[in-house]
Amino acid sequence: MLLYCNVDYSHTIIIAITTSFSLISWRKINASVTDYVTNGDAPIATLVMVAMLMLTRSLSLSIIAAFIILFLYHYFFLPFLRQDDLALLAFLFTAILLFIMYFASNRMIPIPVPLHTLFCGQSIPSSPIMAFIVVISITLYMFIKQLRYEFTIITLGKNYFTILGVSQTIIELLMAFITTLAAMITIILVGWLGAFFYNLPFLSKTNDITSLIVLALCITLLLYVSYFVNPSYIIIPLTITDFCFLAIVTRRMPCSR
Image (tube, rainbow, N blue to C red; front, top):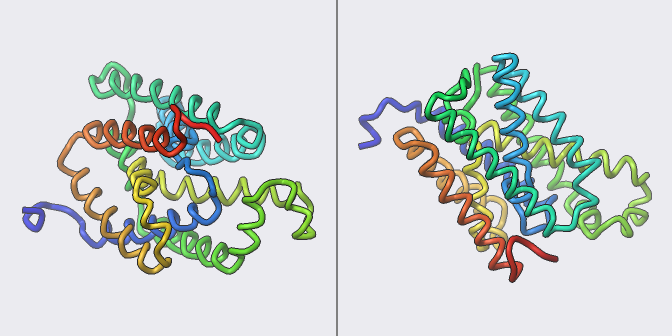
């Protein structure tokens, strides 16, 4: 049936592959069990984009504003939160966002872009920008892959920064920038859908090429489905599953370390 639908398959496959690079990069720099929904990135970025879209009606400005807010969140706020507080904060932002989206879906709140764009991504206005994102995503992946041991040390905590012989401030700025970049690439391309893959633990035991193929196939399937159903029917079950997975892994709701 999909073959008879008016879907740009090449565009979708490129998005799926590009997002896979970003998600693999995210796994290498984020040792936590939380993903970009349960750590607050996705709900905060989406809320910022909703607010900016209502004020400016510009998707580009909304993405830039979301990137800046997430960078500040990662650099100034995130390192000082315990993981259980972090998950509670993410849950609160998610509940607020879904409440706003309910009114937006009933046209009580005017948002000048489809809800599909905010929740399921694919908000790429032109081919040159898509090409730029592809290059950035692959470069990000290659950079992290070459420095995988250094990133492993960094994820052990601040006490290990001195082993690298680099200023702690520089490392914290770099980590905030890279994690924000990886999260924003994923949010722009597939919205909240990429969070699903933190519920697939076997991916962490496979090599990068295998993970890339599996992720690309799964993302492509989810993107196909997102064309034909209301995003709420995908996002709400996904979000519930995400927080339940977090609760099971950490033995109490929503998270503890």
